[in-house]
Image 1 (cartoon, one colour):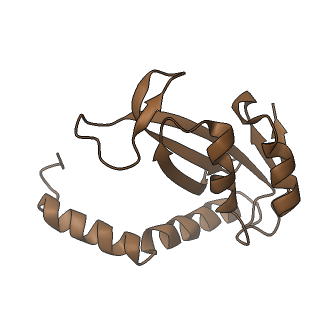
Image 2 (image 1 turned 90 degrees about the vertical axis):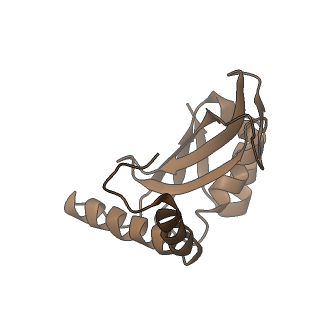
Length: 147
């Protein structure tokens, strides 16, 4: 379902897979994020992150990592995302939708380890309460503030 001015889907998928496996997509995101932050007068490394998730329906064929998010009544996957205060991506992890935010958040937060030297606080909604706050503090020294 690519626009007509794109190459055939298998060519596009080949390059996407190649760049993803080589880490190029993540590197491009990092370069663009740093450029935008610098242009806005901010440091490359953010001091605050914001975490949230969203559940996304999958096809009936499904595939790996698929489950039912009982709260949202969605059968599919959950995209767990951490951004800076400008909304720029810091980390993304995709997993089955049936895993609760408070259980899977540590895996997502762990993606930030050793990457952002100024990071001190991560802001989250009520779905992240529980022992996660203390677990993040002990493992990384960061404050997880549930608002």
